[in-house]
Length: 333
Image (cartoon, rainbow, N blue to C red; front, side):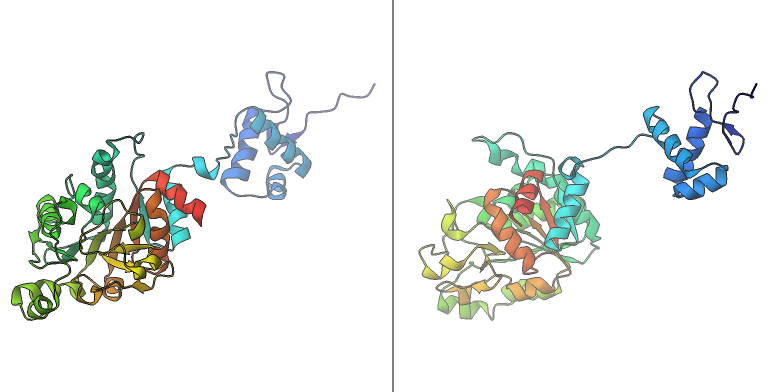
């Protein structure tokens, strides 16, 4: 009578388990560890354990069936904020993207939470710059930057804070650049430098301001700035509100997809002028591109097109936005 076949062994491991199962759990673990954690091929595992490649394949399948190996497949849209931020940074060619928490359901008071939601992400972006005492941080006007400035930001003692554009006589606080400068300086423990000039002075006043030492002291800071914190404006002809110095009926603004630091640009990133824009007291786009770190803050469907155009033009290299806007940008590209 022929002897019963012996269970296949592999380097001391028995194929049959003590509980009657076909495979020894210790062998399943050993094979799975070599293949999944030590990157050995199935052939290498078979050679090391003294068994066949076909047996290794069966062992790996059994290890998955018994839960010794668990494989998780995660769809890109479900893989978390870090992956969404990384995909957006790659798509736009940016150094980094900081995502805020999702916004609550939109409603009449949604603007009231704009700053509270975005401020922590702006804080992380500012922290990453490594600003030191004496470094210059420029800030733009606009609703988003103004709302962010009303909430806690990282302490950056000794940093000089200055506006990127002159003020206006418009009553809304988010167009008062000196007020935004004061708020940001107060939040970070920095030193504010104010620009006492209208954004768009008349011809005679413009000439006078070119020789005013208090004005020039701030303008001379612009080329030496270490960082700019700026909003991105929606297309001017689609805005419910715009600064009073902008003539939204100007034919030239038809080409404008948005603005950054009150400088308008087209879909291709080219500057867009309007009547009197040659007298605009604002950081110009070429100087902006020379600043080492430019952090743009933008949120909302109306910011998607200008955000993409500004990124492609190289106007900023760091972005703070919310997950919904991030997905809208990726869908548009």
